Length: 448
Ligand code: SF4
Ligand code: SF4
Image 1 (cartoon, helix red, strand yellow):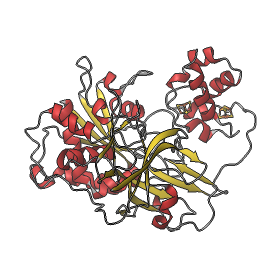
Image 2 (image 1 turned 90 degrees about the vertical axis):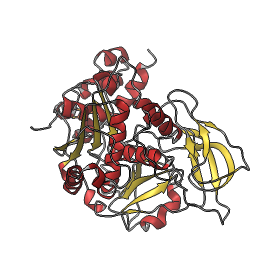
Image 3 (image 1 turned 135 degrees about the horizontal axis):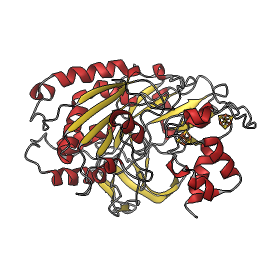
Image 4 (image 1 turned 90 degrees about the horizontal axis):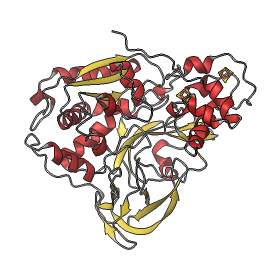
């Protein structure tokens, strides 16, 4: 069976810059800035004050509502400030600053590996919520909320998303190679919580080594797959090798490709009986459940042709990008553009004084030559944006409606369904910033 979807684009991936680099151990920066909003939903609420001392993994902010996520100290030290700081998506967010004073133990003390077989699902959800686990694919939706659908929306299928279709990024690829069994155990936990009957592991064909690693791990029986208490689930996941195409890894897209189910506009995957989780999230769930480890670090990729040593690395949340130059050896050439996240859906940065947070899967540095700096010209009605849109929108028409401030019509033409993949803007020969028009139009229709 072929797993394809309509639309999409084939950008050069540049993944070979970092795909063979082992994930480095995280380093301890001279301070961390922890935004209280690193997730979808209401910001967390600080439970510490300036002057308090914290250890690695201590709770520093608790969830403030149903859709919210806890924040934990990523280094040991003293709280030196609680103030507003810029984040990677250009918001200014109340953040907690921790500075090490020297001499502190900067390692997390994991709880002893425990037998989780008898643990009821409600307890799993509590552990995941307490650990502040959110979706690490970018959106940052609290994992415990995603894994607790209401009774009228039963979930029969779980998709483990290892597509990593954004160009340049390779941390998920490396994680699948280096933490294969742990990720599968995370998937088992997810399946158990949801009571799902089917599970899929979806990986793009440009990550053949990860496909091979997963295939091999799936063949092992439960006790061989993981030393200790063994697997939980009785569901055998099916491995799907996806054709290489952007935006294959977008949640709604991967659900459509694998299950042929369409998540309604404004809806969630649980509306169509499905939950999709990034491989990094599955790993974070595994660590939270087995070792009580909160989400205070994550794997990211730092890459670009001007980066002296493109790397995959664990990074403590709140580490400032400006403190990480030693990790990637600085630049061979001055970058012109810094993007946090992938180049298609990520956010351009004005400076390197931005903290890494839960939603940041990578940092891409681009040179002047790599930036498409051609000036915008008029639409030549080539229709490429229409062909590229994976959900069948007509970006050129929407662009004209937004330009003409005809927001009601943009709304009726379905602009709310746009999930901002950027495929239309990427393919447009007239260099029209279609994605910017989509974002602006979507924001405007909220007000009518
Ligand atoms: S209109 Fe939206 S969903 Fe369609 S290609 Fe453009 S950004 Fe992607
Ligand atoms: S791709 Fe660009 S030039 Fe072509 S129809 Fe769309 S907006 Fe117009």
